[in-house]
Length: 296
Image (cartoon, rainbow, N blue to C red):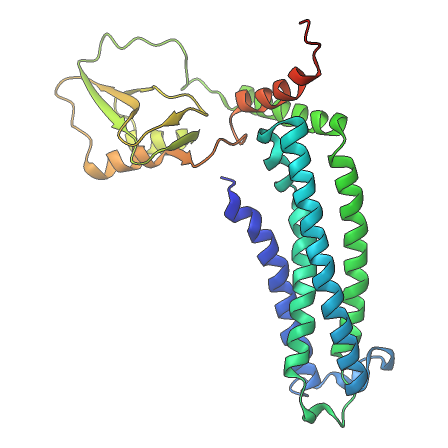
């Protein structure tokens, strides 16, 4: 499931790539990896020039990172005030939004760490780190231009509605494809004598029911599981998520099997549109209502 931690993992991913690049360049500059003679001279600089380049780029990248974060917050404010607070996550879920932050943050880490590791041992050498920093800066400029165009498109209401419509359409299409014969809305439990409640172990919004995990746990035994909560509903700890019907004399579920059934119900701290098509439609309604005339 998507959550805020996964969103910020995109930032960590690009910072990690910059860290790997830093280690690789330092190994070359320290002559641990003998590749310096095979690198074009245009990428090699003196120690003093490298320090100047890294200092300039570190300050510039930190400034542009702050500007990018400010721009992101401005878009989130626009989404929340002009459209609906529910659509804020749609902008944050775009990989390009977190990608540009991670790119700039990674560049700052690269430049500042190169400055830290520069010693007098480099004084007699021509080093590679500054040349790579310049290439990285060019890549950052490209990412920043892409980010600006992305923001310009994101704040346009027609693009936002089109994206929400596409998400809702895809969710409904997936439900129509995955609903099989083992799921039904018409049920009869009159031939079952025993009821086993499956209660929630935590509080949160029900976002997914792992049907395959349920069928693996129950196997071929004659059980009928009635799910009481709908996708998107908020359930409290101890509240009944589902009722498992069984026939009298049938072997009861073990404690481990009960825990597996409880784990099949995915709970999140906030409502998401991963499987909740009603929430996706509600976002469109939230944007449409302010556009209606007060006479309606």
